Image (cartoon, rainbow, N blue to C red):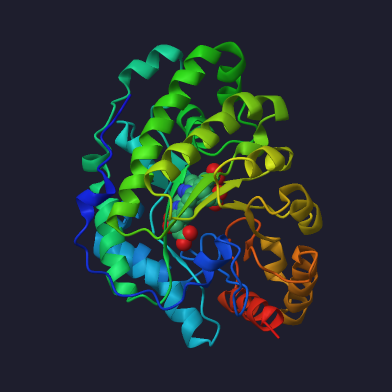
Length: 373
Ligand code: 1CP
């Protein structure tokens, strides 16, 4: 059990610029807003030529570990969308979910055209003994430094997200050694070695809790937990190996930093919506397979929701994007017709072959179509 999280007070004394756009924070609390806030998962990244220019000169994890570079690529989408007259309502720190396995002592490489690669993934339960229990405050200090610098540089224009991978999603990468078609090796652990699986999930949960709290101390104004591979689990396996750890994270993080909105994205786990709405997450992020009307009905005001335009819809012409956005927003309307408690996003992240202008068209459509009358 790691217990190295700094009290948030350890970081007090930052003198950050006042926040000028708090739509996202207000929407997370179900307060009225002048239009629905919108940001995009993976809004920094390979679809932006200015990001590719930075990556041409620097290795992926060098960008993550160098606060000035992480700050620069975090700001790139803000600048581009501002210049187009369709400003984003949030930023997300440039980093990756796989910095946690690295902090536990595993090597992770980013292979061009392939994605993350672990040369020595976990192969059997005894391999858990080789994992280091990190002092999260030291091992991931570069992320906090990047957050602090970026929060200053944003100048209060929009809130800054910190984030983490969820325990199951991280476990899946640590065993598979990278992306995978069916996650068969990682799922085999759940069924054949459930004790070892719970030990690993609990270790990851402890590290994640410390990490999220420390990110707030460093300047994060909202937090998102990415369970990108939740949908590989059966409802029963999610109930045993996914949901309890997600709930534990929410309970422990909200106990320490109650005012910071906490988002959860359990991609593909539509069956988990009702259970997640009963936890302390403030916002439930929906993938594109969930019907907005159904999500609002299941969540029933217990949390705000985020989502969920199909990222592939950004390949459509801007007029079509506008129409699909209108359709999506109408599904999210509350019984009184309002759109309170909604943050617009995609059902999953931006893709490398997306056109920046089509993402801009989406942001503009959300703003125009949701303006309070
Ligand atoms: O060469 C490159 O530049 C690699 C592309 C890339 C980028 C831009 C990777 C590799 N990670 C990132 C940044 C990143 N990753 C961000 C910050 C950018 C932003 O949102 O603006 C975030 C939030 C993540 C989170 C992340 N990494 C997730 C969760 C979100 C999701 O998309 O589901 C996951 C699953 C990862 C793992 C990962 N890192 C990179 C890739 C290509 C992948 C997916 C690999 C796979 O399973 O196929």
